[in-house]
Amino acid sequence: MTNEMINRINELYHKSQNEGLTPEEKEEQQKLRKLYIQAMSSNFTAQLDRIDIKNPDGSIENLGEKYGKKQNPS
Image (cartoon, rainbow, N blue to C red):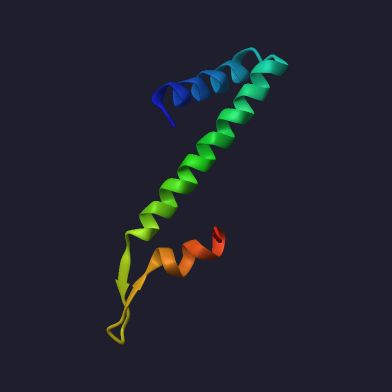
């Protein structure tokens, strides 16, 4: 997700609030929002993969292995 894409999402949002969007702009907005959500989801999963927690019994557990695999089976 580039800054240009985020800026375009914001432009389309503001235009929709002020004057409305054409059908082409609405479609573009939906596609950009979908890409944004996918990017955020991937980023969150990558963060989980890097987090380890120490359980009370002393064992180490990776949050990506515990939670990430359930949502994105590969």
